[in-house]
Image (cartoon, rainbow, N blue to C red; front, side):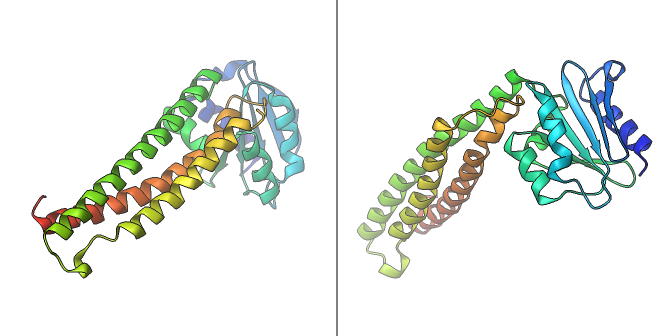
Amino acid sequence: MTKTKAVATIRDHLAHSGVDVTKLKTVTNTAQLVILEDDRVVSAALLRPRGATADQVLPVIERAEMRAARVYVVNGWNEDATAALDAVGIERFSIGPTGVVTADNVVAEISAASGSLLDEARALSVVNDIAATAHQLQATAEQLLDLAMRVRVAQQREALTSTEWLDVMDLRGRVEDARRLLAAALDDVKVAVPFGRVPASRIARWLPVRSATGKLAEVVNAGRREVDTSLRALGHA
């Protein structure tokens, strides 16, 4: 893909996110890097043949300040570039050979799903949703363990054989392991120092919490299925 085509694709993609592309100015224009910006957004096209590297994305990070920031790559990423961008919450996208734009990190996925740039207010809203989901799931996990214990007691009263009992200890162990991971992620985010580069840096700090919440949800859902199976066997379903 040519540089001209890549820049045109970026402009079109930004336009669909509510950006007035007529106000974008080209502040860097080399064979492998084009940076466009206005007072709301900094965006860049990376065209290094062997993939974008950290030294190529640093100028974008430095220019971002507190604006939304997006980086579009044509020939793929190198690990050092992805680490540098993800650390400060900059959205990463890939431009395919046919001009199709694909979100390459979670922040970009969140932004793309909403169809607009991530400003400070929207980033804070996403963080609040992540926090609320995490705390609600912690309560749900506790309720599941309480239900599992009551099911186990009922099984004993029904004089079921031990091979038919719900393995409450195993379930509790899995739930507690996942809860500890989530609690640690929540503790880390409380003491993390804000990067202050882009609005989505808020989200970047909370992504470990989002990931840990997802793992706890998997454990809770699996445990709920096990409890439901035991309830059916007791005739309570």
